[in-house]
Image (cartoon, rainbow, N blue to C red; front, side):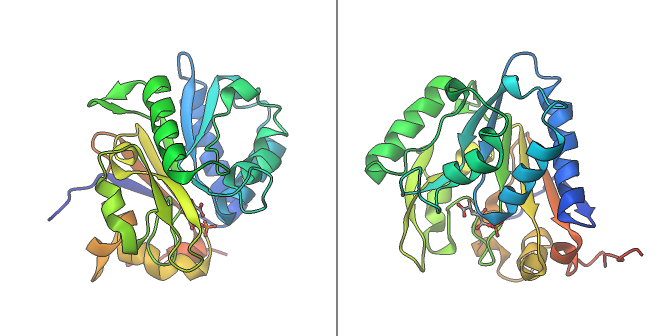
Length: 251
Ligand code: 6PG
């Protein structure tokens, strides 16, 4: 199966520069959106640094009141748990910006996973406009795991990517922690998809996915091929160092 993918790669010297690049994308898209802007946040440690940067430097440059916050995935833990993607985003950004509760649609990690995947799918179906008969996010943030997972779709359950449902129950392969995850139909239907990848420990997997190195097809992140949306890879130098184009470290 071959893909013709239109994507852009933006490489930044540091996480601050990458966060600024992300902020500029948000300024361009959010501030020019006519009414509201539906964003799916990703979890993990990379977004935490980015959210903290946005809270510190972009409280007044982005029209945050337009933004409705959803999640691409959530760990099945209470919202007060240090593992919670909601808690991480709230503490790093949403609370600092005083985002009104009515604009925050968290996945309820404390609920029964199967019921919550269903409930959240219904919420998304109800609140997001459809495109190609599938709910469409204005922007979907994604991270990249060292094993090639994205959102909470892992190589061992890659079939979730092509689920007919909008959200599914997943499980972390090592910790066995239950997760709720967005599926590939929704990811690939987003107007804009952003991979945010930092640190040298992601260099091999980033090159394998981007440059379709041997075994790329078995990686969930490789299946992210937005239909008529756009894909941008935001990498820092360490994460980009294995790309064939041979990133030259300036300075
Ligand atoms: C999660 C994320 C997950 C994450 C990757 C990369 O809930 O953990 O959605 O997909 O994006 O594991 O995480 P880092 O960017 O922190 O390495």
